[in-house]
Image 1 (cartoon, rainbow, N blue to C red):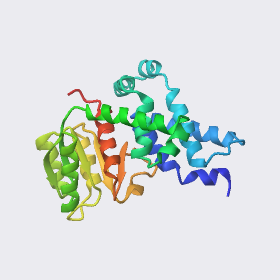
Image 2 (tube, one colour; image 1 turned 180 degrees about the vertical axis):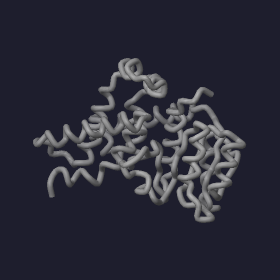
Image 3 (tube, rainbow, N blue to C red; image 1 turned 30 degrees about the vertical axis):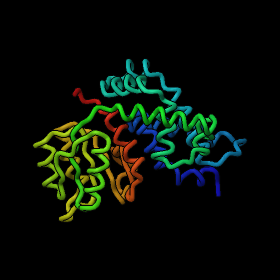
Image 4 (tube, one colour; image 1 turned 180 degrees about the horizontal axis):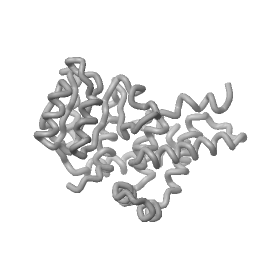
Length: 258
């Protein structure tokens, strides 16, 4: 198996991670490409491919210049994201997401970040404190499984947010968001009547800007690389800590003026 082949399986998740860190598919993907080129050019590395990939990616993300990125881009969304990135401690957020979203062990995260395991634990505690300070908002859940809805409601409430509507079909989802204008949407892809949560979200985003987290058993339907993809994506069955982290990330990167 070639070096390139050994990296392929990690790329979709690396792209998701990069988008969560940068708040932009374009910026995230450019960092991933640079990281892959760096790994393929380095023939001397003897650390596991996944560790090397994430380490290389973080080097690219950390090299971004918030000032130049914001002033050189015509898009105000990028300026807001880069300004927000400067508010939190980047390495603490990275440590938290490596454990919670990418499911690295503390020891593996320490290798990625090139720090000690004790420092990773300290960074994760720092990030958790930052996440707990997120502004409370309202949430619409687009999901047709009652048990999952119940769990999502409890999880959202534990973060200080409030569920204002639950939708089981595409039509209900569009109506719920239009009527309540929430600060966050949690959406599945396959809904009760065979309709599509993805279609509902696309319709919603055509008229209303809101951060959306897809919570789905079918992530491959969204991570195709052929069209704009969701920045925030969690696979079912989900880890509660991972979803909590992504909720805070989604709100953190929300560029709407509240």
